[in-house]
Image (tube, rainbow, N blue to C red):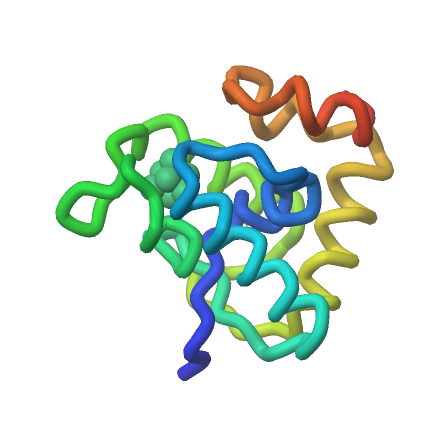
Length: 128
Ligand code: SF4
């Protein structure tokens, strides 16, 4: 089992992250996780559940995101577009490549997360 769980839609969030987030603890963790992933390219487990980003998020309550209805929809759309199963293990760079090729480069970002509060950041870099 991989020690790094990443939920599906965080394949987008991590790539577009530019230092903004829910709290200082959240952004520090997000920064550290992104640096680690880019440096080490570890095998990760892609999940529909909470992950190593959620662990430092103020929206996580009893292991479940307070916005779970919405974010689960994002996760399932990324799962469908990338053709990856829940619990599948894959190298971080390979996951990023799929996210880029099957979502960002083909203008499908807004098919995933058109009602996300952070979309204004990602829209500048990815096509909707
Ligand atoms: S707990 Fe929810 S809002 Fe926080 S990082 Fe996880 S999915 Fe995003």
